[in-house]
Image 1 (spheres, helix red, strand yellow):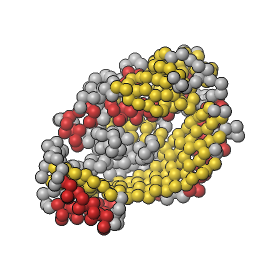
Image 2 (cartoon, one colour):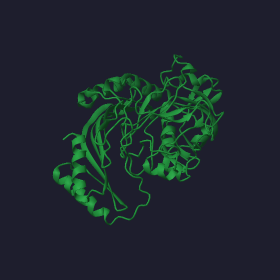
Image 3 (cartoon, one colour):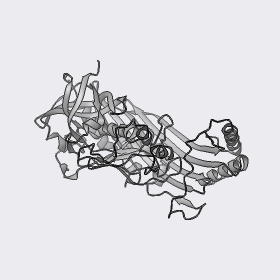
Image 4 (tube, one colour):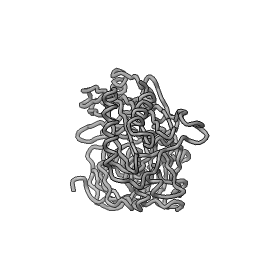
Length: 472
C-alpha cells in the first residue's frame, strides 16, 4: 500500500469500529533513514532504518485518545484500532478539543480530494542512495582534513513520504529527501567542525567541509585562558543554529506563548532591525515536511520582520488556547517530549551587502568572514552545545562553546581560546542595537532528527556573557 492507501484503510477500519460520530485523524509516515558513520578517519558502520509509522487520534463523546504503531500489516492495524476504541471510552473528558482540520479552502474543493502539499525538494537518487554514495562524501571529508588530523562524524540520507486523512474529508500527501554531513576534525586534542544539509546528496561538498574542519583543528592549538565577562562576539552559522533552535522551541512555540511563558509580544520591536526570521519549508534547496500531524498545510511564515515580532507557530490546540486571530500554522511538534508547536525550518535572513567575497581564512565559515573586520576586541565562536534553558520566559540559556574559539583584536584573529561556559538570554543578544552585522549568506544546517534545518548566517553581536571556563 502507498501511505495514502494505508491512511485511508485505517480511517475506514476506525470508522467502522468507533461509529459515525467519531472524529478521526490518521497520519502515515514512511521514512528510510541511512547513516554512514566514521571515526578515526575510517568508516566503521553503515545502518539503514526503513520504518512506516501509523498514528491515530480518535475523539468520541468528548474524550480523546492517541496511539501509534509501526506494525502496518492487517493484524497490526486491527490491534491499534481496537486499542484506540477501547481507550477512548475510559479517557478523561477533554473540553479543549480543537476539532479536526478542514480541507484548505480553494485548494481541495471537495471532501475527499487529496491535497498534495508539494514544494519541498525531492531527489530520487538521494532517496535511493546506497552506502557507496555516502562513502564518497565521507572519503572527501577525511582526505581534506589533512594528514595531521583525524576525522569523525556521519553522512545521512533520508527519504520521507507522508499521508494524512481525517473524517472531516481532509486528505494531504507530501514527500521530501534530505542529505546531511556532520563532521569534526581533531588534532592534538583540538576539534574543528563543519556541517551541511541539502535536498540532494550530490549538493553536499565533503571536501570543503573537511578543509574547514581541519583548518579549525590546526589553528586551535595552544589556546589561552580568558577571564569571564561580556565579550563582543562573532557567532558562526553552527552557533547561530542553536540560537534559532531554541527560539523555535521556547520563544515562538504557540503553546508557551498561550501559557504566558514566552518572551514573544506580537507587534513589538523586540529584536534589532537587522533581524528577520522566517519559517519556510518550501525554500529552494531545502528539505522540509509541508504539513503537520494534524494535517494543517504549512505556509511560509514570517515570525520576525526587521526586528518586529509578527507571529508565533501554532497547532490547533495552541491556536484555540491563544484565541482569535490565532490560527493553526502547521507546526505540531514532531518530538513528543516537546509540547506545542515548533518551527522546523527557521531561517535568519542574511545581509548580502555585508561583504560577500571577502578573503576567507580557511578555518572560518564564509558566512561569518566579513563580520570579523568589524570587531575591536571579541571572540569568534564556532559552535554552541549542551545548551539548557534556565529561564524560559526570558529564554536565558546556559551552555558551552565547542569546536573552536578565537580571540579577535582590531579585526584580526590573533589567538585560539579555551572553551567557555556562557549564561545568556538569546532574545537580549538580538535586541535592538545589539546586532552589529549579519553575514552575507545563510548555509543550510542539519538538525539531529532530519527533514528540518536552520538557515543560519554568521552574526556579529555587541555582547555575549561568558561565566567561566569549560572546567568550572
